[in-house]
View 1 (spheres, one colour):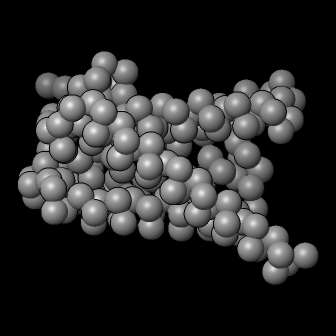
View 2 (tube, rainbow, N blue to C red):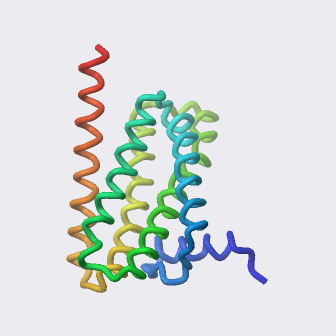
Amino acid sequence: MVHPLVSLGHSIYRILFRGGSPQRIHYSNRGLLLAMASFVLLSIVAQRYAFGSGVIQIGVFLLTLLAGLYVGLALLTRKVPRERLRVTQLAIVWILAATQLLLVLCAPVLHLFDLHSRGVRSGLGIAVSGIALLGIYNCLRFALASKDRKAGLYCLGWAISLAAFYSILIRMLEIVFS
């Protein structure tokens, strides 16, 4: 018998790197709560130790991603059947948690080799964000049951919106606290 975490990890791997669909991930309320809790906890640890972020930056990061996820899924409710949307939501949260786990695993290497320069951290963030967007793109292809172009445009628009929202919030906080 295969352990559930091994099965989940294999499903996430298939979505991220082989273009698979999230159909193998079975939705449950408990699974969604576990995925959200894992994502939040791993995000806090990853942002703190991989990027050296403070409490405010971590809060803005979580606010941006969770609000963006909520709004993005709310916009899909009119176009996607409920069962596909539920599975897609769960898969996206697990993908975000997995990418945060990747950052947590990379953090000791950054500290070990004293690679805490801004360029290395930015490169790592861009690489992990690219992996997450690839997984989200594959999930959207499944959810929309559409061509690659439409899912790609949705994913790109979502990523640009989140980056702009994060930048605006950080800039406003810098103005307030400077």
